[in-house]
Image 1 (cartoon, one colour):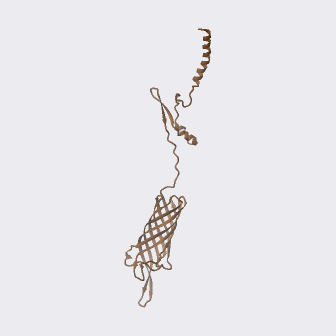
Image 2: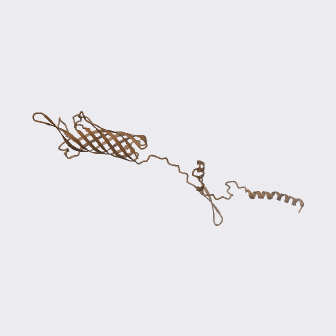
Image 3: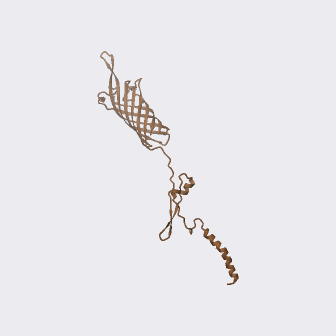
Length: 284
């Protein structure tokens, strides 16, 4: 072999050996190269820090690449999609509510009509207190059952005390607002204790007044409108007007009618009126 060729080979080997060593120590393998060997990742759930910043949570939602080695030495690359992080739902007011309503009320008495022509007694006026238990299964509707206690001077000028059981359904037109308009209606059962004044005319034309205690019972219906003001999450104020029509159901109704027209002698046991109520409701 010529000396010049041997010198050339020795020179090349001097430069090639360090290059091969560097290539073995630092192989050219760009990140994500298809020819590079994949490194098995650690448990992805263990790497997620509960207190991590939003950027770290976004990294945790990326797909996980897993390398699986088969028995024959081949490798499979599996890509596992992680479900996106669920956003926390905003807390809303419970759809189902119970409520306790406390209210004061005044009785609205009508004037004369074709069945009962006499005007209300000059001292007539009645009012009272009441309470009800309310169940609101959905924001737009509620059941309301309550007791009312009313007393005073009735339409005919008699001293009267009444207890009424009112069963109503309530429809809230705009339940998402703080000021809610509602309609209500239902059935009513009531009993009254009345000090009835009787006037007897004697043969000489003189009049004798007497009083007797009588008991009446009624059944009827009511319908009205109102407004509820939510002053707090669990507290509301309300004002409503309720009109009612009812008839007597006691045994003495046929023989002793409640209203008698002094001019025509016509009688009736049907009566009506209104209630103006204001109160407060505590929800839970």
